[in-house]
Amino acid sequence: MRIDLHAHSNVSDGTEAPADVMASAARAGLDVVALTDHDSTDGWAEASAAALKNGVVLVPGMEVSCRTELGISVHLLSYLHDPAHPGLLEEITKAKDARLTRAERMVTLLAEDYPLTWDDVIHHVAPGATLGRPHIADALVAAGVVSDRAEAFASILTSRSRYFVQHYAPDPVTAVELVRAAGGVPVFAHPVASARGRIVGERTYLDMIDAGLAGLEINHRDNPAEGRAFLHKLAERYGLLITGSSDYHGTGKPNLLGENLTSPAVLARIEEMGTGTPVVRGKTTAS
Ligand code: AMP
Ligand code: FE
Ligand code: FE
Ligand code: ZN
Image (cartoon, rainbow, N blue to C red; front, side, top):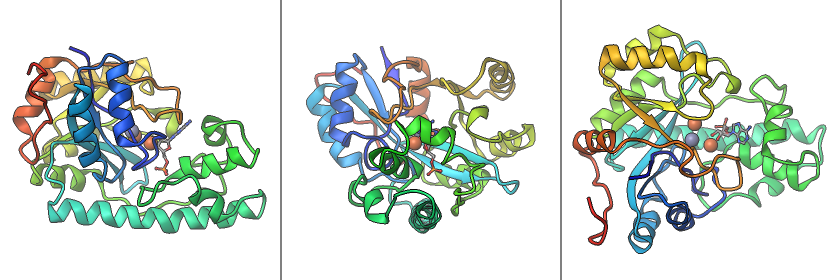
């Protein structure tokens, strides 16, 4: 069984429509794929139909943008939550709306130094999608300022750049509580991805575990080897699930579907724990 629990569509910052992500998953030889767009579940319906058509099992999910009180960014994966749960929906809606204002501010700052307009950015965004720096990167690529998203993130768009603006995001402990309240299974995404920015200390893990954190995405290309040993110790001590995923973004990142996998036993635990929405599994696919 090939199981990949982290993929994005153009409902957030992936480059493929949800149905195309399901087709790509089938082509990559996956049996199971999770759609985990940033702060949105808008792709679930389209992905569900396409998963059945392509003979892959879909785990409906989401990646919640969070920030600690020290200003450290945390991404929290949620699997199988109720997408209509008011508390969780309120937080992601607030974050998604704040992302729009934040992107406008960043573009205003960037426009002072680069040939970039708001229209150039919107041109690359599917209607209603969760706006992020990757969309600004796409506009900078189109303007010939950088050659790809990676180059934009390495310079102009890093969190240390003078063009960077923060947006509202819930605290990760609150997010874990809300995901649980919505019947979802919370998993800390790429927890030690130090190249993206500062990473949290042990205290934050303990607080998230107290709040109901279920797992750690240890097998992800952005987690360096040093940090993984610490994560394995935590997982063992607190009985956390260990997942592996690609964090596929279509052509937006080099990450390939299936480059990291999650075990069937862990998927079975996630399915037992997740009560807010079912896994989408066609009759022809063995369970
Ligand atoms: P934002 O949430 O708008 O601050 O932007 C962060 C998003 O940018 C993350 O979801 C990543 O998927 C994406 N990202 C971060 N670094 C890179 C990179 N080097 N290349 C492409 N996308 C990236
Ligand atoms: Fe992303
Ligand atoms: Fe992430
Ligand atoms: Zn992601």
